[in-house]
Image (tube, rainbow, N blue to C red; front, top):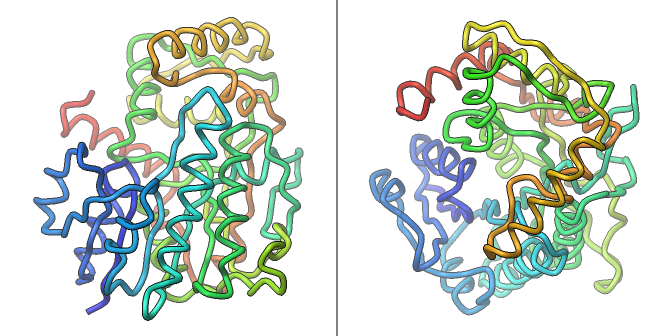
Length: 342
């Protein structure tokens, strides 16, 4: 029986991954903080190992006897680059260092983000060889985390997966879109071209993660530990997304269709959203809590696009989405209703 450790298992994506791994017969352990709500994980029958990305000793203990690590834990909302780096870069490095000192280092799948690559140009979706140029603090920190892991690729079998926008059951950010469109049939888009982007349903992403962890290629071993392999070296790096290019405008249409509603899409340049983003950051600092929408998210929302090409994972590992985006939005809507969220 394959033994795995999942970080970030109390989150939206990690919880679905843990559930699927249990269904596949894996022995699943999850790294959890002392304050985490582990009730859902306990119902799955997984082992909860208390630790933190800030504590390398607890990471070493959590990694004992593990064959593979799915590293999803990270910080998504913050106002300062330093806060992002502490979790997404330094935390990833501590995890890989702890993995490296195990008697048999486990395979590590580091789940990064399309944000680490930066915006795509019209008609030019990113692939694994695209030189990264992140525009947000979040994207910069995820790329820094990749670099930190790459420096240890001579001691730890490592693969990196960069997903785009993820939606599906358990997604509270996506829930806001459904709730808004149910009450107000207007979908505002913060740029005139509709913001081209790639999407992936959470269960399709889970299948991609498992495929890469079990059968994917690994990041090239660095010749100089202080200078990791080039960040655009495609070896061991994957994008996973629905192959159909979509947009933020389409997200509204898909959600509205699942709701059985018709909506009006209104495109605006970023400037009307600027005061909202500034206010979000100010209020966040006052309350000591990162906003859902601040300047960092505005930098991403006003970019030229966020589109990636999943050809590599589809051709080399045989992965593909199990259903269309329209069907996946209908399934998401049904889950929200059944769970009492909508």
